[in-house]
Each structure stands twice: as structure tokens, then as C-alpha cells.
Amino acid sequence: MAIFGGIMTLVSQSRRAAASAVLALMVWSVSFFLHFFWEMAQVPFFSGMAEARHWDVVWLCTRATVGDANIAFGAYVLGALFVKDWFWITKPWRLSTLSVYIGFGLIVTIIFEYWATGAGQRWSYSDLMPDIPLLGIGALPLAQWMVIPTALIYAVKWMFLGWQVSKQ
Image (cartoon, rainbow, N blue to C red; front, side, top):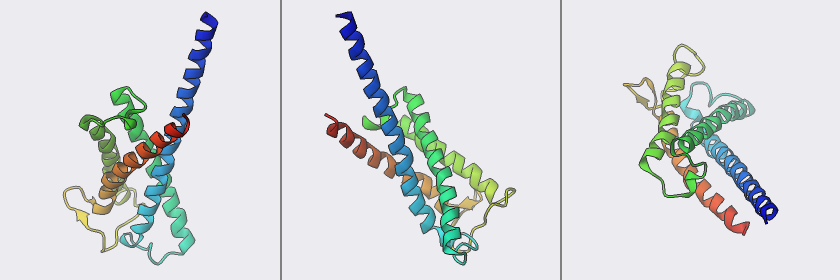
């Protein structure tokens, strides 16, 4: 009997590990998808982007999106560490967890945008970009880190729960 119990424990752990990996992949890939479209939509709000060659813009937006997806994944991990539950997204959300999750992305965005448009000279905004005077950054990158993470957790929760049902 002890051997059977041990085998069942291994099977259960294996399923949990697979579910963890699937959830991680969903968080990163859905984030990439959503952020890529946001990055492409805000092209006219950055200097020189509207005039640049199409594939140069796609490449720049893809690189930015990889960073965005990594930040979003990091925010998800911090939320999971905060509640000590990797699968927090599948349960009713607590305001404190959402604050950690969204707050991390906002803080990283504020710091990076401030640096990139200032000392880092990575990019500059066109006259179309609405700005946040107290922060010295554009409003659209800040809005991105409120809209996309919210859409991400709804989409991934729906997808992951559907995946779990399909595995039964």
C-alpha cells in the first residue's frame, strides 16, 4: 500500500508541475500578445516611429514587448509569492494581491520611462503623447500597465480554467 501511495503522490506532483508550467506559459504568452498590440497601436505617439520602415517598427515593438512580457511575468510571480499560491489567478482575487501585481508593473514602468526619455535617451514622445506632468512620462505607457495586466488576468484565468476542464 505504501508503494501505491508513493506513486499517487508522484503522479499528483507531476500534474501540479505540468499545470504550473502551463500557467506560466499562458501568463507570458498572453502578456506578449496583448502588449505587442498595445506597442504597435501607440507607434504614432513616439518620435520618428510613424516615419520609420515597417519592419524596423515591428522589430522595435517586438523587443519592447519581450521586456513588457517579462515585467508582467515578474509581477505575476510577485503576486504569487505575496499570497504563497502559484495558482492565485484561478481563485477570487484579493485587492492586496492585485495591488502587488499591478503596482509592480506601474513602478517599473514609471522608473524605466523616466530613465528612457531622460538620461537613457532611448526614445522620445511625439506631440501626440499626453503626459503626466508630476511624473514626467507619457500617459499611454502608464495606462498600458493598468489596462493590459487587468485584461491579462481575466484572459489567463478563463484560459487556464478551460484547460483544466479539458484535462478531466
